[in-house]
Length: 180
Ligand code: IMP
Ligand code: MG
Image (cartoon, rainbow, N blue to C red):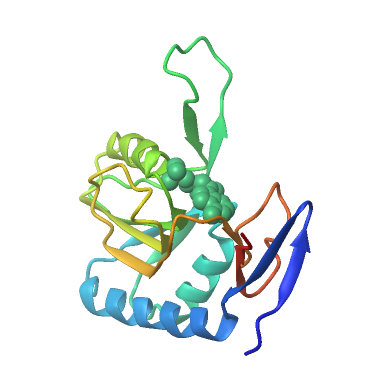
């Protein structure tokens, strides 16, 4: 496919991963999960907003018994001295002794992921697996294992397929990378 250039707000982007390539890879991840987690009756927890397209496409190819639910990280303004703490909201299911699979759009520094895992651990799940569509190894600061990832990408800003720039471009079906 010919590279397409788009403008979102003040920045220019070019096609980086086409929708077709995304779907092929997402299907591969689903097949791996079907194999690995058969009989585990896992609960997938999609982290909003970014993961909605990934979660939707992945879930269509997951064929084992499982549940899905969606969580959101809400910043709370409080008296915390530790800075920007984010609270996980929307968990209505009991995940005690369950196999949990976190679905993320992207893992960058891993700070968000660490927050999520810390909070979920409090509910005493059996195990927590991490599944992210995109992973930026050069930016990653944590040692939490990434069990499943779609694509390793360089440390550049990308958008589309659920990922945004200031709230925009989540609706694009391809993934775009910033033009330098
Ligand atoms: P982390 O806490 O640094 O791992 O960042 C995770 C969050 O930052 C993701 O859930 C995204 O919302 C956002 N993010 C990180 N890199 C990008 C990017 O290249 N494009 C769009 N959003 C990004
Ligand atoms: Mg996100």
